[in-house]
Length: 134
Image (cartoon, rainbow, N blue to C red):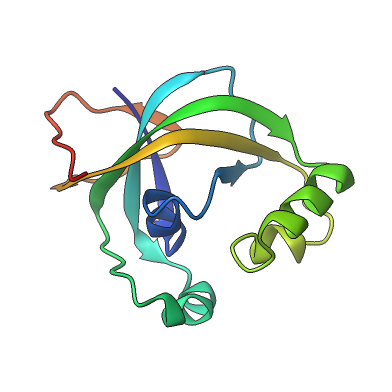
């Protein structure tokens, strides 16, 4: 199955169903199931911003499965839409000037039992087993 590595706290925000878009500078034509891997790197400023949620932010593990349903260019209209949807969750994209990229729309998000594995750049393949938590 395809996997995408995401920094913490954003991987957990996805796993919890709070973040429905993952942002990249590159476009994907892939649509379908994907695993969310919490990478080993952490955005320390963002971690402070989401501290109040009281969530666990594991690193180096696959933590969720989702479906990529669309890949949209992040223009001003889309930025405004995300800001209205949840200005705290999408804080980073709302405050990046001159950023040019895409949002992978995620749906059907389900947590999985954490699976330790090293991440990779881009979309990558995982051949192992996963089991759902909910």
